[in-house]
Image (cartoon, rainbow, N blue to C red; front, side, top):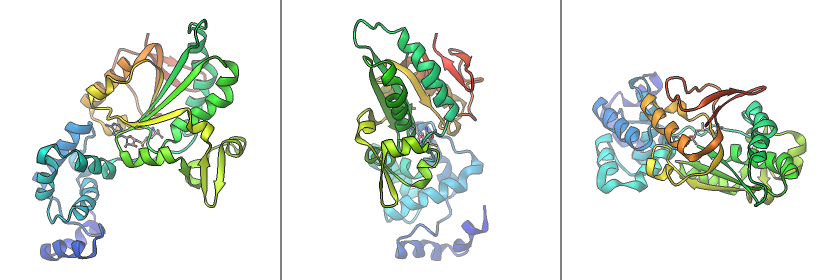
Length: 304
Ligand SMILES: C[S@@+](CC[C@H](N)C(=O)[O-])C[C@H]1O[C@@H](n2cnc3c(N)ncnc32)[C@H](O)[C@@H]1O
């Protein structure tokens, strides 16, 4: 544990008093190992997110914010609160402080290129064109919406003109309600838009002071909702997907959680549909159900 975390708690009484007078989370109470294990297990059972012992300090600093918010002075009281009558409200607030929501537009450039140039046209060409076909993309673990809106921009720009009779739908989901609310608002700062080509930035965003607002035309293509990837019942409600982007979230799961989540994603995909995962992630040892497909600049997993 770093000195930063140890310093204010040299004296336990002071540590307990101080943060609750100032209502900031700058100072923390040390989390006993037993409380860590119990809270870690609740998080794991509810979300699949796994904190190893070496990440205890991370969890401690994040949960300190929930202690302050609930006027609690120790982690055992927080455990009681969390366990009391299946406290969904507190659980949702907990997910807001423990999840890592880093993302930006056009993050996985090569995957997006493979999506619009190869995969989407291939899938759409095999759809029955006598009726108006539906093409469904799911940004699972969408965070603040940049991935889902990037897909929407590419659909408007590249796919819709090629396949005007196709009805495109994009679903963005996350476990964290705060990021979903931000996604619905669609207002971004420099950091999020730094990879957006100038042409798209002019066409699909409106500059508003230091913010960039995504256009309604893009927004209309995307629906955001709370789905916990680890909740099999919720996952069963998402069906008929042609492509799923589930990027940069499997890294937070252990092998059992990954297997469970990937199996649900498999069920949500149509036959011949594709799954994209993050560049640093792999299904090696997780699932043999998919066929690994090498595309010109990216890889994807196909459900055959
Ligand atoms: C690093 S972001 C990835 C955002 C985007 N997919 C990307 O690649 O840029 C990871 C997201 O996964 C979400 N997440 C973590 N566990 C989850 C779970 N069990 N179910 C749904 N979303 C989860 C987090 O809330 C966070 O917004």
